[in-house]
Amino acid sequence: MRFQSSSLFNSLRQTIPDLKAVIVIDGAGEFEFHRQPGFEFDADTFAAEYATLFRIAQRTAEDTSLGNASEHIMVTEQAILLAQRFGEEIAVFLCGSTQHLGRLRYEVGLLVRKIQASTA
Image 1: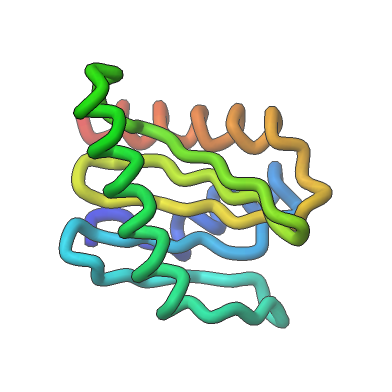
Image 2: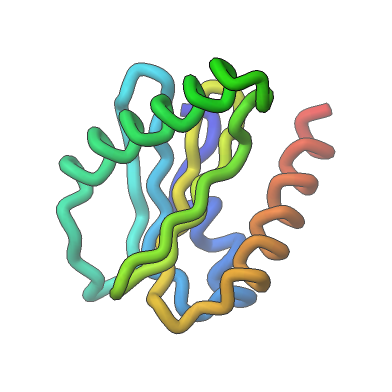
């Protein structure tokens, strides 16, 4: 994996205090995750099913001439998830339901630009 979940988590922890976990899923479905101490969830099931969901969204965007899917947002009763595509990898930022979505998108966008600038 090119991006480590712990590095992404630590990069956002100060600006996104409700960040619970970061999951990085590669093109083969392998994953790693870093979570806030005390936060429990089924990472194995999540990674497998979310990778499939993102591939479906990607294929739908391509099939309908909308281009490549670069970001996916899901809001549940207990969490806000923002998935950002990095080449063949997907980084999923999982926050509590009280996190402001606009702030999350802004901070992840800054992180993406920072990563892109450092790898260019």
